[in-house]
Every structure is written in C-alpha cells, then in structure tokens.
Image 1 (tube, rainbow, N blue to C red):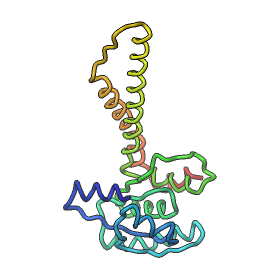
Image 2 (cartoon, helix red, strand yellow; image 1 turned 90 degrees about the vertical axis):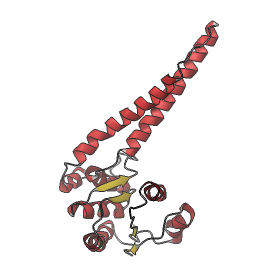
Image 3 (cartoon, helix red, strand yellow; image 1 turned 180 degrees about the vertical axis):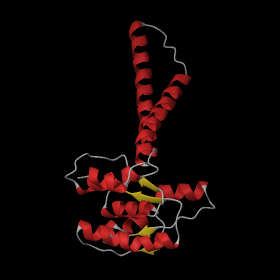
Image 4 (cartoon, rainbow, N blue to C red; image 1 turned 90 degrees about the horizontal axis):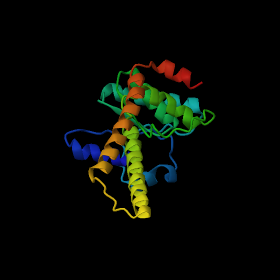
Length: 206
C-alpha cells in the first residue's frame, strides 16, 4: 500500500487518503513492523477485529467498516492482498455503490483449496480497477522479447560475419506493444467485473 499511497499524494496532492486497519493481523511482526519499515502512514481508523474463524473475521470487518464508509463515502476503496479483510472490505464497499480497486489482483494460484485464493476471487470480480498488473506484465514481456530479439540478431550476425544493424526504435516499440497487449488483456476482465453482481462472484468461488 505504501507505494500506492505515496503515488496518490505525489500526483494528487489535493486528494485525501484514509487508512483503515482492520486488526486482522495484530501481532507486531504481522502488523506494526510493516508500518515502520515500509513507510505506511499510520491508520486513521482501527477496527480491532482480532482473531476468529473466516466467517467471524469477515463479518466483523463488514459490520465495523460499513459505518465509516457511510459517514464519509470515499471515491474509491483500495483493498490489498488475499486475506479475509480483503473480501470483506470489497463486499462492503460494492454494496454501498463505492468503486473497488484491488491491489495484487494478478497474483493467482487457481488452487481453490487455499483460503487466500478464494479471498481473491470476489474482489477481482467486483473490482473497478485492476489493470496495472496486466500492463506491467505486458511491459515486462515486451522487454524480455525485445532483449531476446537483439541478442539473437547480434549472435546470428556475428556467426555469419555480418555487421548487425538494429533500429533503435524497435525495442521501444516492442515494449510499448507489450504494455498495450497487457492493458487489452486486463480490459476485458475489468469490463466483465464491472457488470458482475457480488452474489455471482461469491457463487463462482464455490
């Protein structure tokens, strides 16, 4: 969250970010240390849900977060990761008509025996914004493909005694095309997600 918050404050200095700590992780090594070492700003609200079963933690987050969102409706609710707080906050926001952005939405195992994977599915399905990772993966693919092409071209030219001639724009075009492909690959899931009812998203996780 720290890089996202820092980027928002840098690019949108007039905006306000309100940080809510659910308290699902309350041990120092699972909570405070991240605020200290990663530069995450101090929370504005502490829900203090503590430990419990998956259902208990999810229910407590929804019950305690809803009044905050009603009292001060945000333009966007950002939820990170794949924990119970993630799915609870996403569902609470979307039921109030608040757009949801999911950080780490692209990190999927597709193993639905893992609680974390099940927790990723509803936020991904209802998220309004999760294109950044698709674009990033596309950009990286473009960079790898471009570098591979350059190496192969130089190797073949050296093997045959030719002078390699490389257009300096080609690697940039390859990276740009990779980023565009990533955005297009993420656009369709995002379009579908914006039209999917939360109950359908939950049904798909079973």
